Image (cartoon, rainbow, N blue to C red; front, side, top):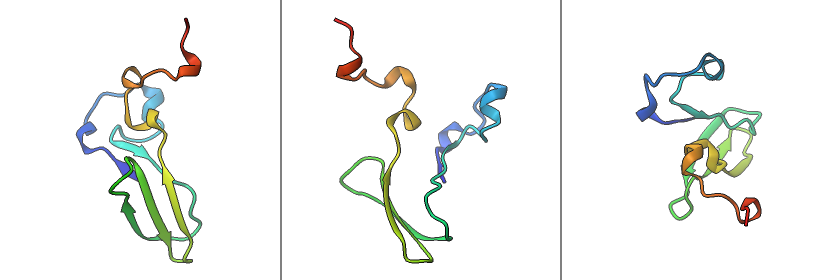
Length: 82
């Protein structure tokens, strides 16, 4: 789980409240065993390595729309209208 503690006590719509508290950003569901360690990548933003008790290592990156507000994300070149 990845949390943004600056979002504690933010207001939510009833629909968003069904997904959990506002400070819960993301739940990685890739491991089938208990996670034993994780580390943030010091060179790549929002890239995390995690290892579980079954010795499976996963390297993953959250989608930008998870940690940025939609208004802050620049449009892709493919979605620009000329």
